[in-house]
Image 1 (cartoon, protein in one colour):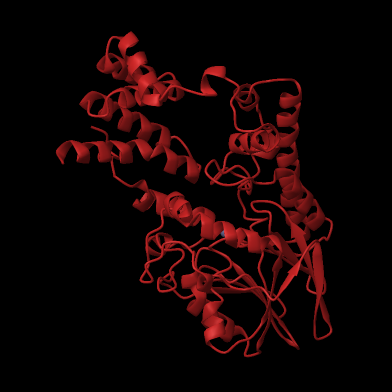
Image 2 (spheres, protein in one colour):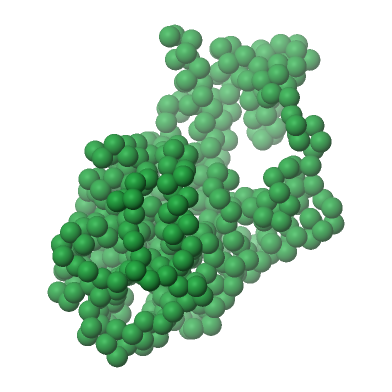
Length: 437
Ligand SMILES: [Zn+2]
């Protein structure tokens, strides 16, 4: 039997440690209840002054930017629902001025849902967002069940696992298209629309402080521009935004997660390397599509140059370059992998049983998978999956599927790949539970 046959890798220490590397100080309990107002990060917010009258606040897994002006406070983002009270307290430790304006960098569950605690405290800011934030929230309502599953969420005390009811959503007072300028007292702030991980993204430039609040457009690891289970991402527009930010020669970027970036040279290096990286993948993919290559051929021939792949702040801790490539393919060429048999396929279990029959049985298929694992783990995984799908109750197939899934998972550094590769352990556990029941 395999060592790491936990039913749910999401709760393991390894996963928590890796998530902390990418997203900051994750509390695994909050991580299961991102949409629950009653579940907080469980520790005081981290508050870091980054410029005069300017702070980065980390109430949980995501960052918030706070700008104090003579007219009041400008807040960029507000964390998860459960971060609200800690964020309120952190803001009050920095300034007693009223909350004047809130800008959302996008509508994700970890960035736009903590405002309720400040509103409950009597604050009445104007709330500004890109107009696509409204459609983003509509999508959240339509796909609450799907998001519950793919984000490993569980219901909070409200009974809801994902924002789905009107009262869950903050309501913007002002929507913008390409961007807008804000005046707080006699200070100017520039809000710019972008597309990156989402189509409702925005970033804020404070020219007099030389600070950018970038939201998830800058996170300190490879952009999440290819997530296999989520809606379209925008690699090209992400590169555009990175270049637009780089041209400003800012001294500080308050990122969406993790550490700030400091110093004009480090900022320029990170942003321009990021845009070059994204553009390299897009160009490679479009060249392949235009040459008539199959999606698999395009992905298999992707070779990211070392000066991009080796950048310490563009490591694939979360996403992978191959997934960004697939996302570009989906954007321009649809979902079909161009293997004709896969267009209207036979059920996967039927295919698997036929492969097992040809191999001389499920046990033979599982044995071959284990034999191959040392030389070609990727290929071995297919055989192991066929063996399990051919007969989910076969102990050899179950054992083989978990062992090879765990080996693939342990060899990966991307969190989203690790989660996907912990599926065999979960599926085998479910099959064994059905067997017992
Ligand atoms: Zn985020």
